[in-house]
Length: 213
Image (cartoon, rainbow, N blue to C red; front, side):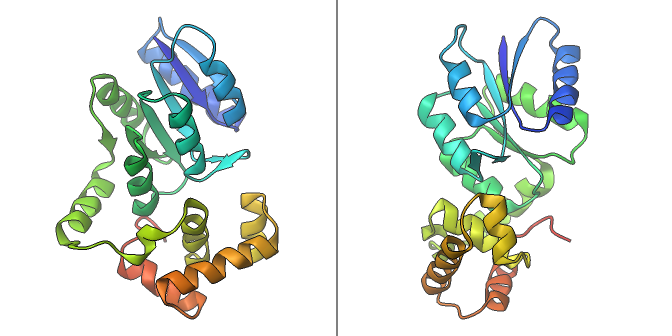
């Protein structure tokens, strides 16, 4: 068994690798500090059994990394790890084909449970996120405006709704403030809104910020 641990924080990698070795002592764990490292590791035998992917990598922030990894390795089970306990990100990565989504603040036992379920051919979502997702699916008869946003626009929407400044968003996404302002204008237009306050209200009304606060 071969795990790809794709995470740019060395301390977090050490902790996860120790957990993996304790539960699966015979498994081989390949540590990757960036998505580019992971794409290179995918070319080296044996084939990876499962990938654990940080949602906020310096060279592939947000769901972009999930999409690129799955394009490079179709069928590879991917468990996404994120600092954000947001239903919006969870829903997005599952739609892309990820096998699971787990906030990083969950207990070690949750990570083991998630990997075990995925290795058995299932999918994993934490109980609170799963409940909110079912409520969304059950009450949503038609597509909503935010579902038509691009991945970058979607990420900008959530960051603006959380009160992040354009300059800080630009730094986090490794883009220029002008580009972020352009994304903001597109998001406002597509959602038919006029301000950041309305963006925040929209996200709250559609439960896009589950786990915030």
